[in-house]
Length: 412
Image (cartoon, rainbow, N blue to C red; front, side):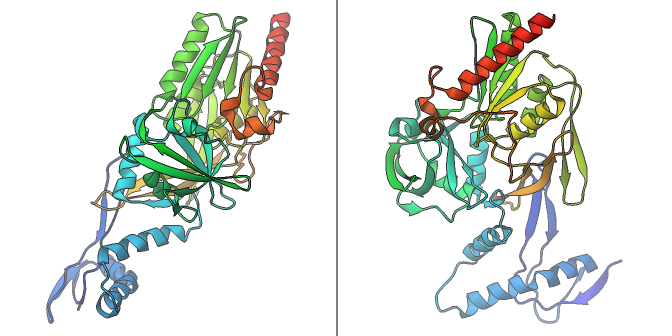
């Protein structure tokens, strides 16, 4: 029931909106206009409660704008309040996105973008930005950057207190423009000047050995990786593959809707994983039994994270693969991206925890491989130096897979 309430409002009350990008929905919570003395407005009790709840922010802005010694932009105050609100969560995977950040995010999802050809993951221990993948024939690889480098500066600006979206915006830019990225490699600080250019994202690479082993490198669960992975499996089936070596080293994760059809080809019918949100609501992701059913070895390392860990956990729970390498990164939480304003700004927020079919959550700990295989330090630091002759994890993985194929053929 609505009733008339006398409200004296000195300044504009903040307008908040939120909506999930995928659905495009937007929910207007409350808005108000300045009222002259003596006027009344009819609002609901819920709207009045919202005005009261945010009165502190409104009063702060009013005092700053009217009394601060220097001129200050109301828009800048709101932007910084948005940054601060999310930063207070202390979650390296949750961050505010400017309209420019949102545009960059959508660009990277398209499979092509202008940049340097490097990806990084936020270390939850100290918030540092660690390079996890460098694309071949990219500005980053040509400059000499390495996986494992800690990014500390872009064009002379210290980025160690910035969130992922802000750093990404600094690195991205127009093709042909110059930038310098500064990294910490061990105790040495190194500058890498380079020129931005268009980079094509290739998430799946595959080939077949002469003895029938399909080798697949899956770098991320994004763009069209699910389609490309299915093409790889089909190629293997058409060429009488006997086993699969799946390389997930350096795979930082990606989208659930890309993960699910890939997992479908490797798992029996049943639960792939499930998530639980703030209220304990559970969402399950199922496999439909398109399982290839061949000997499978999966390679992983400390940069194998998120969706790739979800896949590994399920493979281990169903005991349908041998996982080899080193303990994975340890990210078993998921994020959602929301639009929060009509200007296009957004929010990337941790909203769920992920669990394996047997209920395991490995967040902050990582997954232990079935067979631990350490990589030489120089190859761990720079995967671009790996070859079939010196890559210890690959060599032992192939040996393990061949022995699994032989045992299956002997039992047939």
